[in-house]
Image (cartoon, rainbow, N blue to C red; front, side):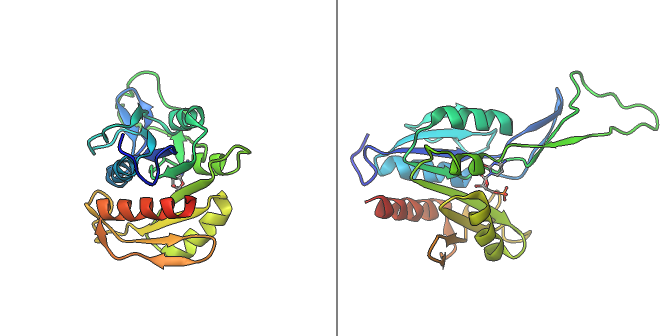
Length: 218
Ligand code: C5P
């Protein structure tokens, strides 16, 4: 472990998508690659932090030197995050499914002539909101907001609604190439205002976020 501005700090990071089963072979997912969360974990390690990395089934290679927990569903992610507390900083970069299939089948659903599956949904726990409102919450709780419309306005509302300290907002509209891509263009929303960061590699955005965190904790 290298010494750095986050030496002695525990940083908890969620990353990647979640998978919500429909039956044993099918699931609902999203386009998150886990690249931004992984880049943040690497940057936190370089800054000397002890890092707990809770990831859904992501494409990105796992970050080295972290305590890794692999999960599949939002509910598993919630349970694992809760057990990993306390932390000094929590960064919620995962693209958690808002809903799960409440009538998931125990065996593979069969195609029947003229029949269509009737999926029913239940709301998943909001991990970020739950952690933000705990009495023993980390001193700095950071959420992400991937939006296709009114990105910054939605992020400002989201910061208040979820009770977190910062929101890293990004535009994931078709054509930006951000979700699943190597670059990100974000707006940091804090209690004091908003800052547009220039479009850059996800590793550069990660480095800047970690530097900003270290400055705030100092
Ligand atoms: O509401 P929305 O899904 O856009 O919020 C995104 C932020 O909330 C991200 O930081 C994401 O990791 C977190 N989140 C969560 N649990 C959920 C849904 C979102 O932690 N069930």
